[in-house]
Length: 312
View 1 (cartoon, rainbow, N blue to C red):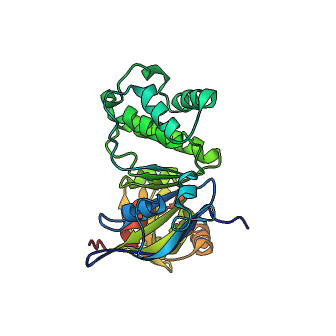
View 2: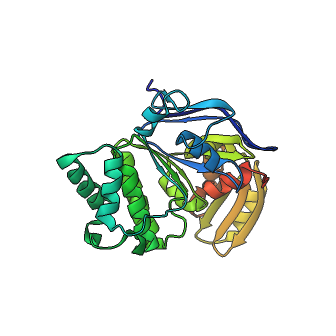
View 3: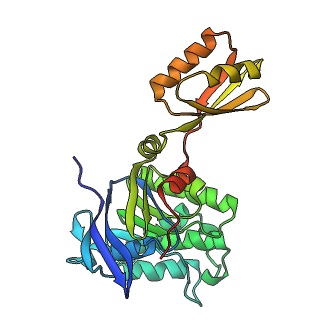
């Protein structure tokens, strides 16, 4: 089995009396986009900063592609690209100069440096902004420049802290498309955000933390399965919704049944086999079922069901 790209091992970090991160462990694989979710003050940024070698834990370790952030931080820095939640470009530099500065800082030289700057600028949609000062970009284009800077040394792991914060809808869609292209190219992406529906559309897996501790982790499908002990089901009928309601109220594992025109919504505590049996009995009883589907828990549902709203 392939070793994890990122492995957080029993990580703890205190600031005074506050335990920002408390014995936190999780892992993610190459080519995956993992959402890092939690309330304000949950420890997300602290964990990301430790993984980016910008802070040191009190206990535990983080391995990036098998390399310890404590033992070999310089080696880790060549494997990661860190995008902080705030972007503060240097003044008096235009877009190519800004990227060239960081390319030099990463040790790129000569023709390779020029080609890399142009290639990354093209990927991030910045080629038309060659004469634009880095401080004069819109929020969306500034985030593209921030991402471009992060990609210059071709890191294996991207650590993105609230990268979509403040972006308009079009900019968020375009930014999300860039991330999917990067994941398809094999890069791992750890991304935090409070825009949960967007994360749900982007991520393969999610780690939810609260008060510095892991609450739940896994693929979206796995977590949906774990939190749906009783889940809403929607059924649309061709006619006689009241008859369908009376039928449903007599069935096992069915809770409250609400009728809205030709659509019925009800709580259902059964598994997939029980749901299939319920649908068969409904059709056999003469109910003209047009649609029958579970309302799958999205990332907001997962977040609300797995956390208690505790802050620190």
